[in-house]
Length: 384
Image (cartoon, rainbow, N blue to C red; front, side, top):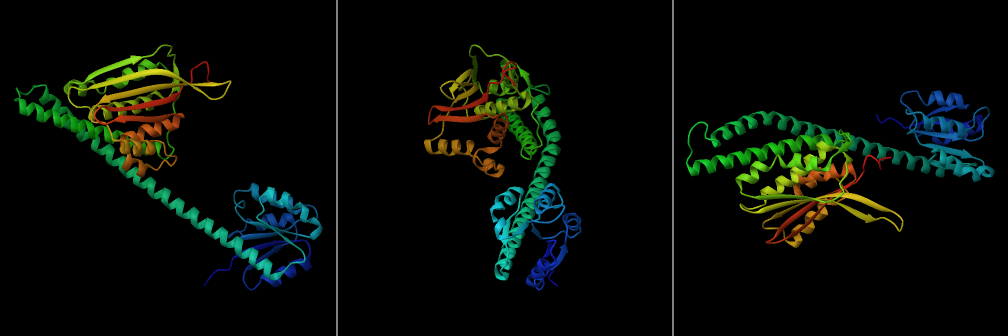
């Protein structure tokens, strides 16, 4: 049995109530109130009305006051309200819309128009509810997927650390001398396990950031400490690949306000990306400096830019353009980012988004690539 939509009619005139009742009784479940106070109580009775028809002119509490209280109550604020009014009151429509009403009907009422307007608003409400339910389901499924990935990542980290520890013992020849081929094979194992651990860390970090669970832990940080702390994580890799690593700091780099852990994590990802795509004997250079952008004729905004440049194959113009578009897209769809730019760069992008910064790329085939982190240069003295 199909349940009829429930409509609450609020009018102090019994004649007006009878007119509306005759128009609507066959298609809707009707409840009525003759005062604003009664209407507010009846609107709370479950199931709450699907729509409220509300007269403006009533004693003690007029329709505007009733609507204002309905919209202030979380339990009733979503219920569509249609005002009914006399022709001489039609100029007050703007006031009703400002309070949250969805429509106006003027007396005398036309039965066909009344039904058409009510049906339209009930249909819109049903569509909105369907979209809200669908969005809630999608969010729930995404959260479950995210939690599942995070759990897998967490569980895998322990055995991976064990494998990495054993391979490092073998690589350092603590269990015996290795042949050249054996040493190279173990180095490959080390590199692969390290890469897997980085992926696990990225998944865990993204699972937190992607659902708004991350609150920035802002603090005053020395710029050089961000870079030095990040380089520690790639020095062993660059040593084994005989990569020349250099860093250059610009002048006038005071402390900056940011989340050091997240920004350092983002920089580590860029460095790992550079190491992966730099051939043996290649070069990686980090340049840290302040840049100024003219926002208007009277104001200039300062940014901190950390550029990571590596020699290597580089990217074609088409590939670089596609990657740049993904890095600068407004839609932060994690699934799309993973396909186009990978987990590591997706994490970098999310971290910079949280700080109000951005990531840029320049690349040339046969020369190499340069990724640049740009962050607002908020200092302890400039922070509001």
